[in-house]
Length: 267
Image 1: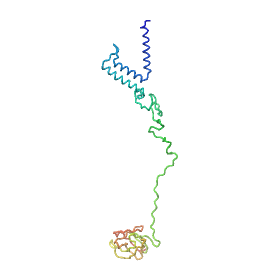
Image 2 (image 1 turned 180 degrees about the horizontal axis):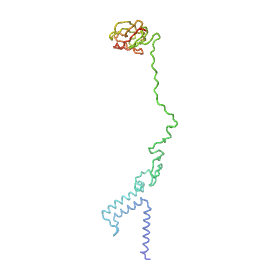
Image 3 (image 1 turned 90 degrees about the vertical axis):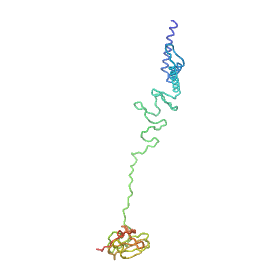
Image 4 (image 1 turned 120 degrees about the horizontal axis):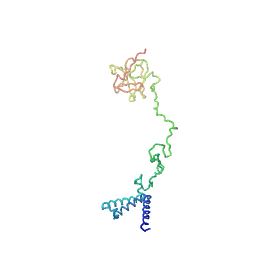
């Protein structure tokens, strides 16, 4: 067998080994080898009759070759990793490789990653559920229901505290029975003053019937035994009539008609 005939199988074996090496080599190796080949071709490598690029083609191959070499080196040091068939960015402190999911991330039936607990054991999703800090939250099954707030009870109105020797309260706008002893309380400013009982004539204080002084407690009892008609309690010191409410409290007013009260004959 001639020497040339023996060289052909050896070349075939070498070519097959190179192809097998490229098929089994990592992506970073393929990128670097391809980049180096393009850079060599751009630098002047050519094959007579088969591969003779012009100046523009050499420039393009040089740029592409440099990009491939740099990409392969970045993949080698871990700054770039394949992601879903392409090249994706990866932070240096996370060493997740292609085809795997981060720890603590669950996958559903379709293979998609679902959110769950993070690397530090805390929840990373926005789903609702019991707190993870040890507090299970309120137990709606055992906690007693909270009663709605209720308004405090209000005391019913009480009658004014009239003296025991009085028959009732003298009140403006009310018809009283003749002979009753009626109580009212004068304002504080009339303590020690003299008040008068006058008839009401044409809506104004009229004839003087009687006069009396106001004690320190302000309480007054009017005897209606000698009264019959319409009257008003009059304060001559400031020329005002006293309007007496149902509770016996009196206030000065210029409206004599509103302050008047009546005494009718006993049946």
